[in-house]
Image (tube, rainbow, N blue to C red; front, side, top):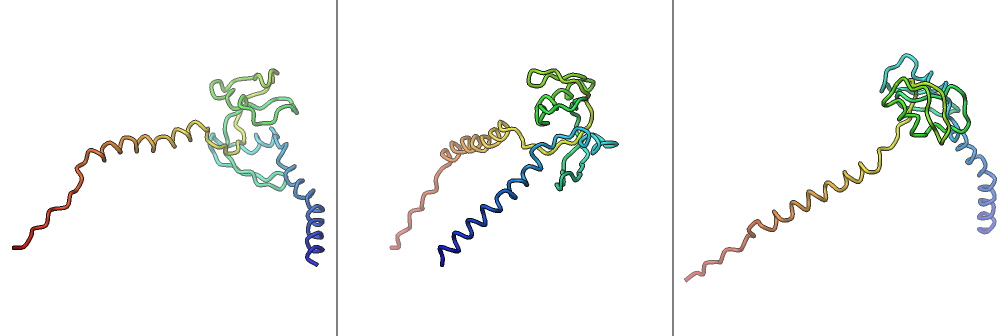
Length: 154
């Protein structure tokens, strides 16, 4: 009987697997330049925005970035060139992405929160260790408490 329950639960799991996998399809290819620009229309840099798309609530901020003028399927939206092109020159009209020159413009658009870079995290982790190294010699030079000799009664 336990064997039947076990086998039926495995069969049920196999039948439901495609539904779980299709949920991830919704966020795989979502770089929609028009939607990202529309979310920040009338907003200022750093403004918090949220919008619904494909049944998901997207939260982020409005940041200057490069948007291609022509829909290009080879652009995923997470290329560093899209944000770095506008950091120095907000009037940039072309960007070189993966060896291809792409025409477009710099404007405010939705940007999802991104994790901080790895070197900063390593630096923050190493700072406490350095403080401890400096603290250890100080602790060694402090006089140690010695018990007082007890007076003997006469």
